Amino acid sequence: MKRAFLLSYPCGAKMKISVILGHPYDKSFNHAIADVTVSTLKESGHEVSFHDLCAEEFDPILMGEELVSDRSDDELVQIHWNEIKEANGIVIIHPNWWGQPPAILKGWVDRVLRENVAYRFPEDDDGSGLPIGLLKARTTLVFNTSNTPEERENTVFGDPLERIWRDCIFDFCGVSNFHRRMFRTIAGSTSEQRQVWLDEARDMVCEHFPGKDR
Image (tube, rainbow, N blue to C red; front, side, top):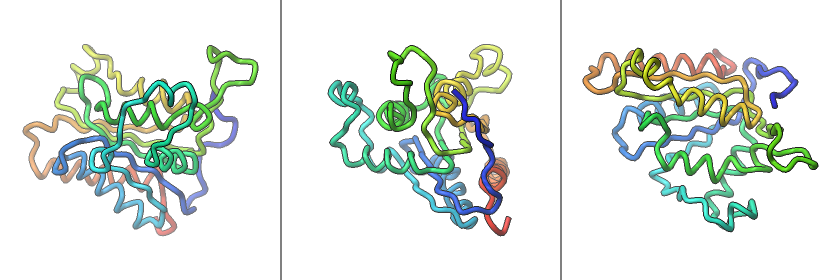
């Protein structure tokens, strides 16, 4: 269920932005995108909560007790819950692996975007009806990397990441102002091409999360 209020955020307002990175190699292009994203947001005056899931050793496994109770004793999960509930914007960064996010990021979705954190159902609903999104975030930006050419991605695979993030996750949680950029192909790309992509990432961050001086 989509929210009824305007999706835009007041231009120049200071925002709380959650940036989530899911890639195990600290010299990856995904990390370079994350660095640009975080630095640009801070330069714009925003409050940034950055999580490199692999570096902080986020546990992606949702155990049965946590599933049925909607409670967790994991202090890191609790930190993520508190931050995502207060975020005015969200940036997700990860590679395209098998048409899906890496397992650690899928586990973040499972454990963090929980019922009564990111969404809820009406009191008389058994969970089969339309959800009510709870996230405060007005805008989500997703950056992906891939070694699959765009034509093959769209015609053979149908770009599953677009459906996963836009429809299955963020629209479900009430965030319908969604933007995504897939950088491709990473394998064989030059440093010059990667710099162009990083400049594009910076421009997208500035566009969707403008600061007072931008």
